[in-house]
Length: 181
Image (tube, rainbow, N blue to C red):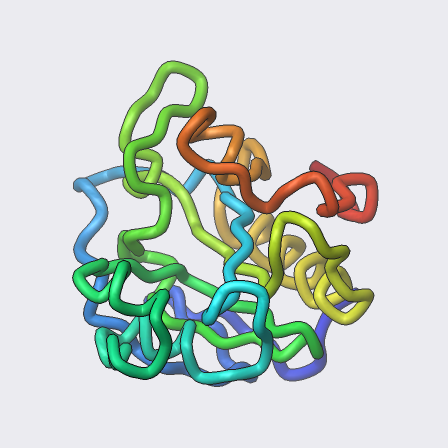
């Protein structure tokens, strides 16, 4: 499924979706190819959907007084390239050509620092709830576009590259619903 009007430019911005630039990114190492897509799950406050929490986190505007959980993450500086809401709305925070700060301490096929060579896609959700049909549709369309633009070798979960530290996207993520992994 290809989304009408979507176009990835040379800088790695996807036209046809909302852009909210995050300061939590930097340059990829010189000559580093994008070879990996990492699927994440996030909701802020935990287990709540539709609010501004994720956007505020990724743009360093999270108010620690707005929810008790926010006090525990107030110093985090994180981002992802894309965030897909429960209704399927995609938001881009970091151009694909830049390094988003999504994977943290990570390893894939013997290589550390997965942020150097990956694109991070956050799905609005939790480990213990199924994701929506709209999210899978948008995710598949986005993955198809990314595969056309970059030499993507694999699509993995955050738990796959940070085992023991991360569990997302969790057991409710249906890997069989991806067009190809």
